Length: 104
Image 1 (cartoon, helix red, strand yellow):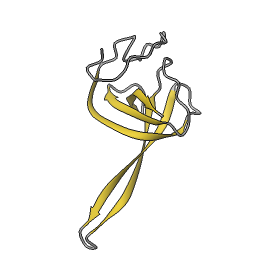
Image 2 (cartoon, rainbow, N blue to C red; image 1 turned 180 degrees about the vertical axis):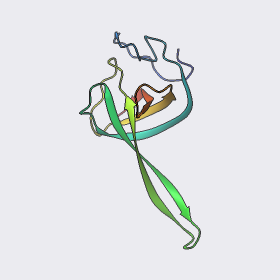
Image 3 (cartoon, helix red, strand yellow; image 1 turned 60 degrees about the horizontal axis):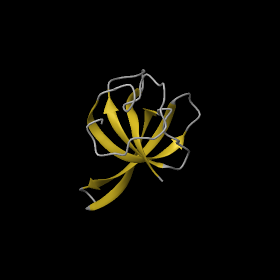
C-alpha cells in the first residue's frame, strides 16, 4: 500500500519511480485533473481547474494550471483521462507529482 485508498494495479512493472512496485514515497498535495499530453517519455501533462473568487465583481472565475507528472508503466494512461496525482520528491526539473489512479 502507498498510504492512500486507491486500487493497486494488477500489472507489475519494473519502473524505479513507481509508488506501488518500487516504493516511491508520496506526501503533500493530492489533486484530480485531465490529461492533456502524453508525448514525453514516462511523463504526462495534467490540467487542473479550480474556481477563484474575484472580490471586485463578487463572482467566481475559472482558473487553470498545468503540471507535469510521472506516469508509471503499470497504469494505462491516455489523453482525456481523469487522473489522481499525488506529490512526491522531485523526479526531474519540472516533475514533482506521480499518477496514482486513473478515473476514466
